[in-house]
Image (cartoon, rainbow, N blue to C red):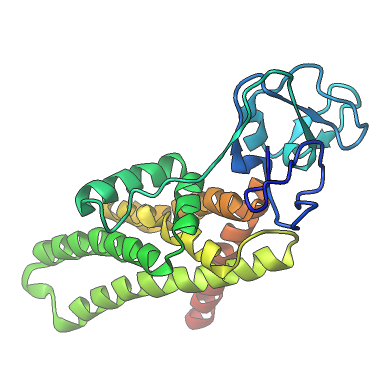
Length: 274
């Protein structure tokens, strides 16, 4: 396991910065083979009695079999098993590429955003194109809102006026503006809550590439409730991946603006009712 910036070996380190170039890293940045690593408890310094399952590294907490203390596996020193294959970096994947056929790339990205949003977002960060991420968000907003608006107009018939059509267009525009504000507030919380890697562009990519949640607007009534919940959940996984932070911390960050918005909305309704 080596630093992806300077190739310095990263074994036996509990700190998550390369000693040579100070580049942040996470054990979640690497794919480990089964039975290839052991980890050392940061509380009692005892090593795991057997190689751990690499899937355990995606958990927020593990229990030490010696002192029974809880710890984040990504905060523990990692040691290789003799003769085991070395890990490989998680480069991330991004099917949404200009050179790919748009329909195929979009569908593959949608499936990946629900299956492994962290790897999709990492692929977006590696690509380094916020505008490409915005194009994915724009595509999802159009696919999610335009059919819904057309169906509503069809069933409403002649009762649909210019004001209703304008309201629908403004709603679609809001779905483009709100993620930017959501990402901005979330990034402030990322920066204020502790160590992380990556700037605002990484946070933006995490939200843009999980915008497939907008497609749940196709569900009548329930869609409006499901979209922010599903989007916040997917964005949390993506945010944890791009910033190298724990999933509980990322979840608190992505859900905080949603909760704040709901509270403000309730206060406005109560104030209007009076």
